[in-house]
Length: 291
View 1 (spheres, rainbow, N blue to C red):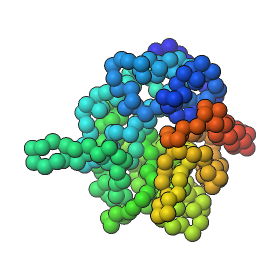
View 2: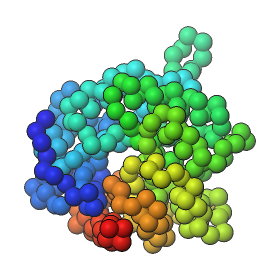
View 3: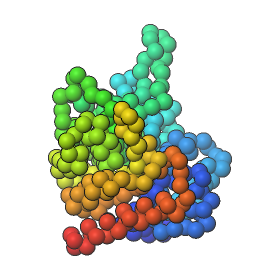
View 4: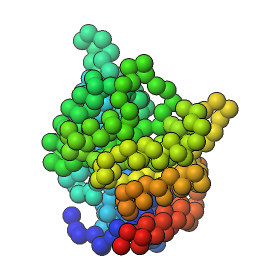
């Protein structure tokens, strides 16, 4: 793998999605990194992998997975882990991440395992923590590197939730050596769905409860409201209150690699770059204040 141009640590990144492939490769806008969904590049060849190699020649690449199902009591899918390891060797990503979720469960005696096509939430319990730690450790041993684990948007809670979520992630990182991918938009969606009287304060309290140094990347995105629920759909600009929480995270942790996610109702590349530029300006302001 050839060496990529040095990147600015205070320059935000974007999710690299198919409609923008050609324009990003041609224009090569200033970005700290690009992030892709790992599973889209598991094939041994083809156009998608060629584009990823081209992106890797221009930018640092972060691999963000949606299918490891790290919280599954049924364990990891060996094929998935094999493919991820192969992709990591090919691309040499700057970061590898996935979610604190489960998707795998046994069908029944002798019938194998079913994989749900969703990021299903886990309980914040000692049992769930043990499962998550075991699976994260297995991935890290296989990849020979630490990974980042992302907090989910919450649409429900479990009766056996016992550990406050920030403490849950702190314990996960302490026991496994992994880091946290702090999704600020997910924090806001969870606070709104929980009916928090002051959603911004709820999110900033979550951030303040995390140990210093635990977060390795931040995600920003848009959400939508329905009559009954707030959905983390990654289909619009980052909301003002999410930017407010992001500023707090930068004050708390200093500038961190930051990604603007936009996965549905994709806008023009210039709109997406504008969101990333706003994040970059906030990162640089935070860096100047801590210098």
